[in-house]
Image (cartoon, rainbow, N blue to C red; front, side, top):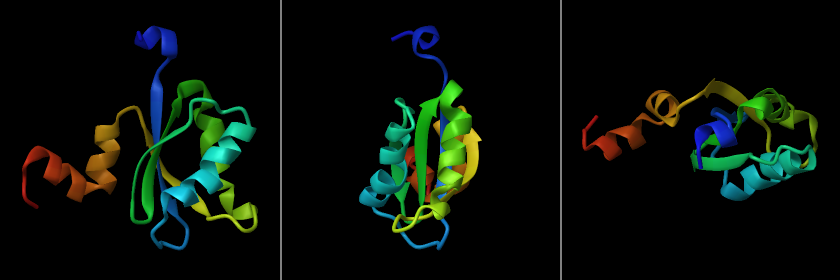
Amino acid sequence: MIKADRGRRRYVAVETLDGLPASQEDYVQSIMLEAGRRGLRTTKLIQSTGPRGIVRCNEPELERLVDLVNGTAARPAVRSFHSLRTSGTLRTLRERYFPELEGARSGKLR
């Protein structure tokens, strides 16, 4: 698919408010299902490690996704998250928030 047809993708680094590791089920229950309810159809969990993860969306949905993530603490019985940073590339977020994974991918030891 051509980028012009699907639009630009944006990536949001998120972290649990309590700093404890989150499971994929936590992301699904806290972010992904609510995103679907709010009409954010392009939202997808890209990766998660420990308390941090990366969520992808299309550019027009970015602001609504960040608002949703930062508002997870207001909903009871759901894991609370906050956004760390947004980027147009996975590389930027991985270098900053997942350095242990980047070193393994490039063959470098850190």
